Length: 60
Image (tube, rainbow, N blue to C red; front, side, top):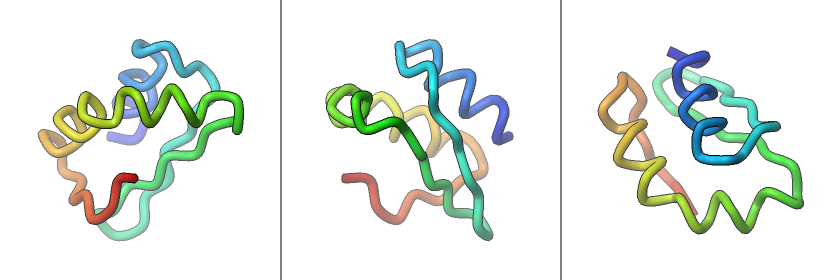
């Protein structure tokens, strides 16, 4: 589950990203230089991750 989410983020062009899980909430950690890219692709991330077992409570 975590590896799958990280591979998806990498496929969107953010290569140094970690997904941390607490209960069923995923937290995505990226380098500061990649933060703008994450904001640009947040809808794609939301759609992909909500189809996994993660519950998404907050995505900037």
